[in-house]
Length: 183
Image 1 (cartoon, rainbow, N blue to C red):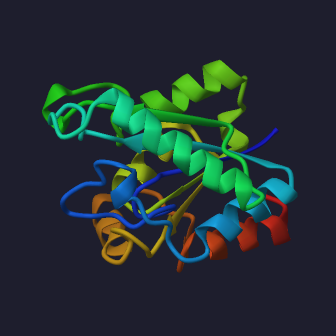
Image 2 (cartoon, rainbow, N blue to C red):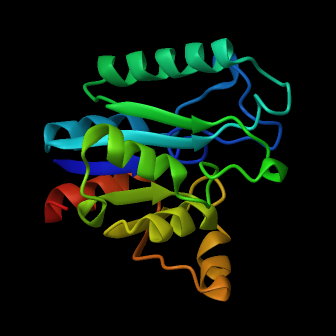
């Protein structure tokens, strides 16, 4: 099984300093639907792993988040892609939750749920937190995209000593690389 873990905000959809609190605030980034369809056509399974402190902050309910994810998955499906699973951490950073990135809990939970060999999996994210979680979980590759928080992330990752295997302009460029090189 070829697995690609994707962060959500800043990778699949536009991020916001005010958080994405519901479907009306959700906007796919250019090329992200095409990227997800390309990955599916090449036999990759996509799992979204996303910190969603909007729940812990009282800005949205679990039901609103579930609705947003259902609508996102349906739009991806209609565009020819597929999301195998979506894992989220609802906690605020101060809670110290083991699933909140940069901790690897969501990646380990996905491993257990789907029988994934994490050493052969890829993480695509827009932040040092995503790259750090990938490293802590033992993922084979960690790709940073420049969308979302990704503009400043390469320098920050170097400064913090966090592994970044490749940097791409966006999810579509990363997907094209994976498909061309077949992982």
